[in-house]
Structures are given as structure tokens and as C-alpha cells.
Length: 96
Image: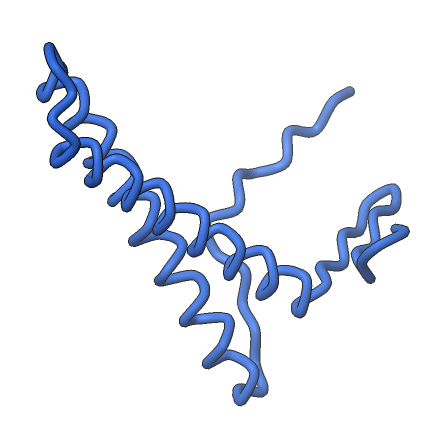
């Protein structure tokens, strides 16, 4: 790969831990900024604002922020751990 140390070959994947950490921080900041943007719309006095739709957007972004925060925290704390386990990976379908 050009910008990371990720490796993708026939039956092997190598993930660049520092790239994962970097992208988790980027996701966290993006979600936080989107959440701020949506929340500010509740105060700007926009006429005929659909608050129900906006609340749905706020909830979705807040849920994504929680995932980004948990992932970022785990990756940061994982720097001091010796063992790494990948979980929640879908099974590989064997094609014949």
C-alpha cells in the first residue's frame, strides 16, 4: 500500500495499527463536528425546521461518535498491550 503499511495478499491481511488509530481519531473528530453542526441548527431559528428529522440525524451521529470513541480509546490503550485479537470478523465464504 502506498500510504500505510497494510498488506493484502491472496489469503492474508496485515493491518497497519497506527493507520487504524489515525483513522479512528479522524472518525471521532468528524462525528463530533457533525454532531455540533446538527445541534447548532436547533438554536439558529430556522423556520419550518423538521425537528423530528433533525433528532434522527443527531441520534445517528451520536451513535457513530460512541463507536468512534470506543475504537479510538481501545486502540490508544492497545499500544501498551502485548496481545491483539481481531473479533467480529465475518466468516470467509469458501468458493468452489
